[in-house]
Amino acid sequence: MGRGQTKLLMRKSGAALAGLLLLCCGAPAAAQTPEAAATIQAQALIEPAIQISVTPGAIHFTGASEPGPIDADSSVNVTVASNCAEWTVTCIATDLLAGVNGETAVIPASRLSMNNEETGGAYVTLDSERTVARGGAQPPTLVSTMLFQLQTTWEDRPGEYQGEIQFHYVATP
Picture 1 (cartoon, helix red, strand yellow):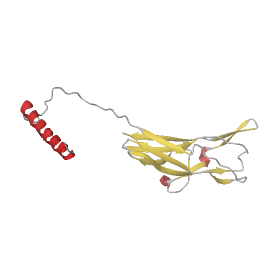
Picture 2 (cartoon, one colour; picture 1 turned 90 degrees about the horizontal axis):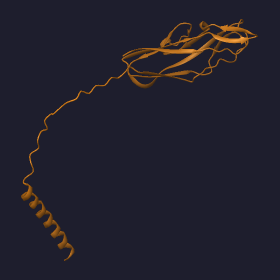
Picture 3 (cartoon, one colour; picture 1 turned 60 degrees about the vertical axis):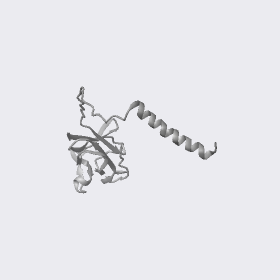
Picture 4 (cartoon, one colour; picture 1 turned 45 degrees about the vertical axis):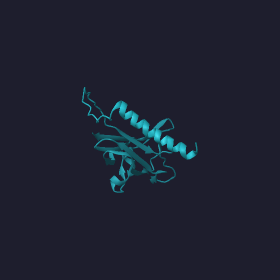
């Protein structure tokens, strides 16, 4: 049997097999609609969530030997992700403290200031809560770039001062 004859035989065999299946099993049944036998309830509880990222994790004020404003060595980026309808991020500073000759030297938080989009570019002191940014539900998004400044005076003793800038949020689901 030649090659062309084999193909023809297979085609005829395939058609014969399909016909044989129709004779044995009958025509395909019409599609049936399934009927509901039982149901279960599906419920999801999604809690309010907010994530705040502040980079870098530290800023430094170095330089000036004379009193006056000292700019921080870098700006600070604040990124927020949230599923809440509304949120507000604020910040506040603690006093900067240093141990000098067995005593504690203090630079009050009122001399640490910041500016960003919310302040219109003006420096505001961080001795009370200041708004950093406001928003709503969003994936991680850069919401603010902040600049910091420290005002020094002749009364500030030489030393390494430490303090914190704390970021807080209020969210409305």
